[in-house]
Length: 205
Image (cartoon, rainbow, N blue to C red):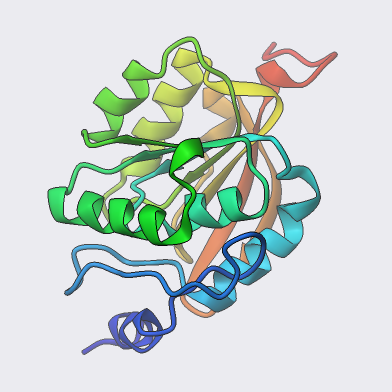
């Protein structure tokens, strides 16, 4: 078992809601390695950075896996979270986790390929979009391109991408994005991205 898979395996048993209305509630994860849940330590670091702006926001969780990121956002006061996950078993885990946290009234679940799911959301504007696509799948580019084309980011909204450390985001400016912040961890990183078109006084030209 390589280092990354071992690290994920160790952390699976510790999945829980970190803070908010559902604090300390244990979350289920999908057995095996079809999904790669964000560890509690990384999740806590992430939400410590964005927590002041979570209240009443519209949150989109792509490649949602166990749903732990979107659930954390709801627990901390997000107005609504939309979860997109194509894996049937993973979607059942998300449903179970939402039931056990009592956050179902503010959750919308879409069991589809991420591209079809995004197209279903045309016309909506999200304050935060979190995406954690499979590593080495090169899905970051095509997903970010479609998000920009569909105009899914609210004014001053933020996209957060979880990716392998070596993932290159040098293409972002060609899609109309810019990096605001980068946070590196042991085996992966979070990239915080803004769409230039949603920043007041800015344009893509």
